Length: 102
Image (cartoon, rainbow, N blue to C red; front, side):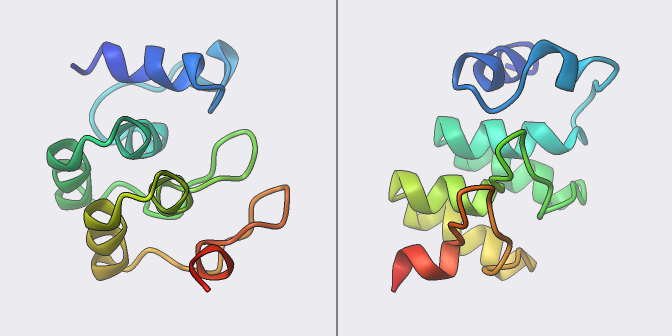
């Protein structure tokens, strides 16, 4: 699964191969975004426990929480908020998780 997450990140347009270059392991900030995009609640929980930065942003400025909100994944969104993810981090298109759930 660890090898699939970076591939999923690239396929979903969350990052380019250059963005991922040199970033490996379970604490890679983009891994949290990829896990949220995949709806992988177990992996999101694991990355939260590993203290992966919750508000890391992809190339478009999206966080794992914003991705979860866009997907309508309430369980992952709740887990990220409970862990301390900000609801106010703004993506490049000005979206924030807070604005989208209003």
